[in-house]
Length: 115
Length: 116
Image 1 (cartoon, chains in turn blue, yellow):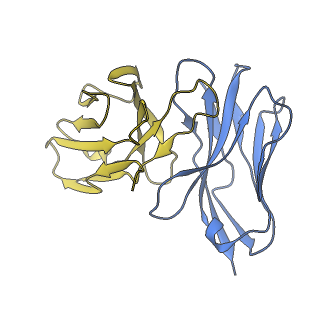
Image 2 (tube, each protein chain N blue to C red; image 1 turned 90 degrees about the vertical axis):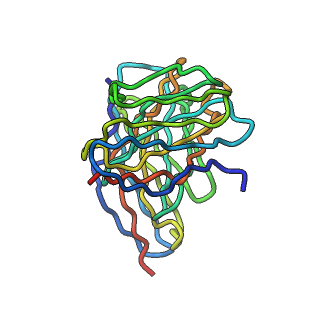
């Protein structure tokens, strides 16, 4: 069974600084997708960034980028120029590339942004 | 608002009662998912539909749980004979099938269930 681990229950960052959230996963598959989702307090979960496992190039979306290390099964999220609105729970998620569409989520990291 | 909506947002019930939740996906989305999220944890997959067909069910979905999507639009999740362990946030998500990572699941605000 696939598992996703986020070893940092809580993180904090100073506004305008950079922070990296860690994620590791366990799978015997080679074709899969990885995602970071953000869940602000009392608000809906939204997709931050995604990565196809077959792509070596790390995905970037504006201030958000990932460091995907397939051999190490590591998928960290870097947030640059942190803003107060980045404060949220961040979930790392894995999805196999097959007919099954369900995600496997990690336990989450709560990010606080300090003014 | 054309996002995923869920009703009710909060539900308090007594142990042993039945509850039903509704999810309205984004109108053109043909895939609909149900997840359960307990405090301090990430969402756990329960089941998913493509159109009206229920294609996958998690082992977490016991016999007391049933989900339907009768016309391939809205979906309902019913929990019979609720137990205190059912207390959680129930999340619905929808997507437009594309067979790639470009397929994005859009989440609703969730229904928070408390079983007393």
